[in-house]
Amino acid sequence: MILDLPKWFDLHTHFRQGPAVPDYIQAHRAMGCAGALAMPNTQPPVSRVTGPATPTAWSIESYRAELSAAGADAFEKLIIPLYLTRETTAAMIAEGAASGLLQACKYYPPHGTTNAEHGMPMDDLIGSDVLRAMEDHNIILCIHGEQHGLSGPDYIDAAHNAETRFYTERMPRLIAAHPRLRIVCEHITTRTAAEFVKSAPGDIGATITPQHLLYTLGHLIQGLKYHLYCLPIVKFAEDREALRQAVIVPGQSRFFAGTDSAPHTTKATACGCAAGCFTGGCAPQLYAMAFEETGIDLGTDAGRTAFENFLSLNGPAFYRFPGSTQRFRMEKAPSNTTVLDTPAGPVTPLPTGMGVELAWRIKA
Picture (tube, rainbow, N blue to C red):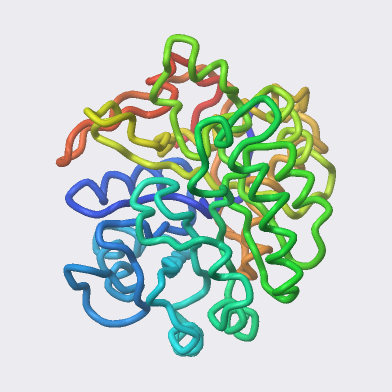
């Protein structure tokens, strides 16, 4: 079986900074990726719109130049969100929108994930002039939807976790205060989040990663498969099933591909495990495997259409730019990933770390 698909856009990924960036970008291009939304939690963060990089901040302008020089100029679309910090102002939003550089802003819960120490509590943003300016200038809010500062039992237990608490306690207040705000609920992991997005009013969508469609908490902790450790962490079987059912609904337009691919040359550290799964080079194959695990036959018109909508069409439509007119092909044939050797060190793709063979391969 061969799938011929429009090239797709990874609307949540991490290219980092430094000498390995060309390798990370090339891994995306090699899997039929026509463009990307490159997350701003770099070191230092992308917390300004224009101007040169400084020791304390990249700007969207300077980080875009860095990525373009590393090969991202070959992409059809490159979006870099502004990292929302306490220094972000409504004037920055207005000026950024007028410049054309600012299309999205990223919310990180304080200390909630890699390089998120610059974030602020959502309670401090709701009702703010910054979010009102984003409404006025049609700037998308990309949300890492987890409540911060929780104790261990509150962070995750059988009934609730940091994500369910955020979507039941914070998101309704956010939408009530900012009904015109366009929102992407990033890398959702729970039934609660999936149901929230499906029933939410207004222009609200969500990205879902391949790992959250394929794996559960049991896969992570059985043998401690630390290459599967990401934030938000994978959840339970009923959560995975809710995500799967959300993406296969015929004609659905709210859910789309965003891998959260995050390269780490060292996963296990002295103070814990670095969060992030690297799926550069293999994300469409993993997504196809996830669709097939739901019972979808990708050889049928209905199955192929559902997959194409999720992977290639829904994301550009939500962000309001044209989908790609170029195409790529995948073949139903076993393949394997290998460790990516970079100038910064080796990076292990998720399938290699999990000891999993891919059921699909990208055709040259």
